[in-house]
Image 1 (cartoon, helix red, strand yellow):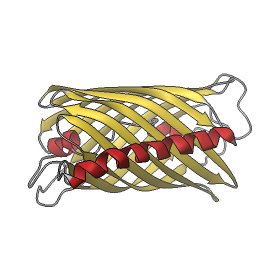
Image 2 (image 1 turned 90 degrees about the horizontal axis):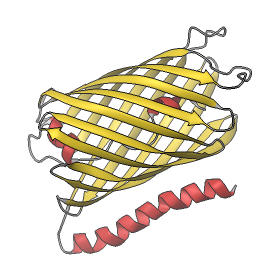
Image 3 (image 1 turned 30 degrees about the vertical axis):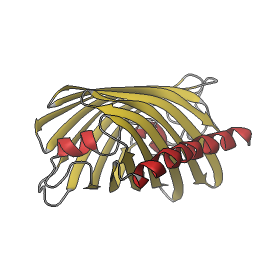
Image 4 (image 1 turned 135 degrees about the horizontal axis):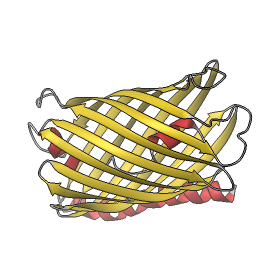
Length: 275
């Protein structure tokens, strides 16, 4: 399908550009490398449906970013796998993509391209492109916004905003709001999310994050059999290992502002529910 190929070529293009710029930079011994690896579990409470079929999702993924200079250009690669189970039916979601963004003392702004392949009895592919930005308003406050397009076996748009507050250097409290609309009389989604992430020991850069999301899905046309038209409670927990991006004994603020960019791609609730 031509649209699927376009998304994969766009994602590959990000990596090609990264290689072209990063190779000479590394040859001159310029720049730095940072990344993270994470695993988590998400529970979608769908008990309001007649089927009473809650959804469980297990995720694993990682990102690596090469920084040419700070302030300066960054190139990032991302990979994620999610296993979703609804009663006796399982779904696998494999995703990969990349980012190109500028970061300085005031924040960052950039472009993300992501391609996903979902296997649920039959395969389905989709890709997304979005522009994101963050503003470091204060040493303990970050504001962010992003928006983009999803295409492939379904097509739509999304827009997101968030606020990150650091009451302490090793605690991040994130408040986010997301909106997505699938075209051609498809559903629309609105959600409000809260996440708390904590780095207990700086010598061991592993954080624990817990989250809650309240999501509302509205079908603008009669929902298909088994479709959703309801309010959902989403609970999540995750462990993340950071490397680079902040130096020895770095704080959580250092990792989040100097390491990989996590404020990219479509909202997790949109992807997790499997439109």
